[in-house]
Image 1 (cartoon, rainbow, N blue to C red):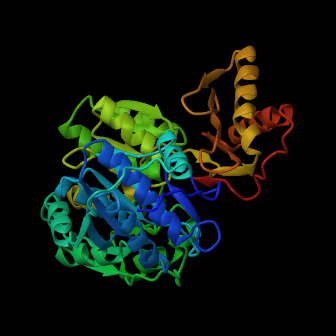
Image 2: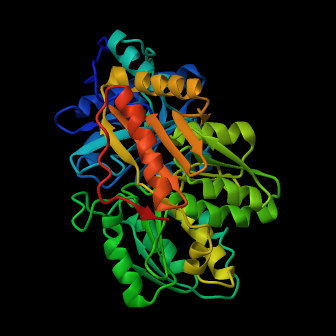
Length: 471
């Protein structure tokens, strides 16, 4: 066999996954190289079996066979589960007892993007491990192959649907639900679940279409939920559920068409899980509202603030034995009865069970939470080699002033008005900020505190225009 060497475009090896623009920064030969290097890691760890799935993007059917060829070139058995939601691939890794798993997906990125999410054993594969793939490819550091591996097609949808539905616990009340998988790879399984759950279910944008003709598949952006909100109103539904492009993130709207943000959703889920597991640790990322941490404590749980990033949260859950975690971005992780990975269809089914057992509507529960006002996530450009430096400078100045600071991930500054956060993005050359207060005047003071620190580090102030949404 000829010697193997490959170089990736420098932009594609990210913190949590490999991602690029197809035909520009990401080519089919990159998929082969990923299979060849990742497969070598699996093989060297004594593994022999890898599961592979792909999303509904137009380029995925071209990248998947190349990835499979790279894995087979390492002598591995490849279980190909076809076009699926990312959580179905994670499920397949447990169901078939594989030694690794790779999903070809561009997640919620624009249609011309694609990428790869990986698991080694049952653990997320990220950070330095992804950089290692680049080094192995450059140096041709791969296992020699005496025997070509094999691959087989397997349908995991039935096993996944049956296992998810096993945890529906809604009692007698029949709900009316609107689902919007956003023409993403979760569309097919959404229709299966909707057909089998009790109650009335309406699925919109239920065909897989990699051009995303109806709206961008990112449920954290309010305008992408407008169609779902309109449909909930038209049907008089109890709630609406949206997924991102590969269905590992969830968006929820209540019966009045108000969006439940990731942290508000986590409050609803945590109260339920803590009834069965009092005193358990519930994890959320640093962008989550103080309301969430307070409500978890009030419900008898141990709130834990952790770093943003699904791979980092999964690792922390495993370490602390936490039954539930979530991020503002809509990644929800159930280890209670489930496997601890981010799974939007599963989280939706658990939520439906809770809503069906509630004496109140979801909007009553949402409006019963302490009301705070906050900015959405503010993102502003900052050079890659400067972004962490700015956060460090801000932290040092605040320490000198005697400010109350949490520094789990960036700086989260607590004041009598509320809090503001500044952190460096792990995936882009940007700084991310957020402010939350109990009053408009308090929010203004927090913004000024943030701007003051940015200015002191020589950065322009973020644009706050028209962004205060109460939640």
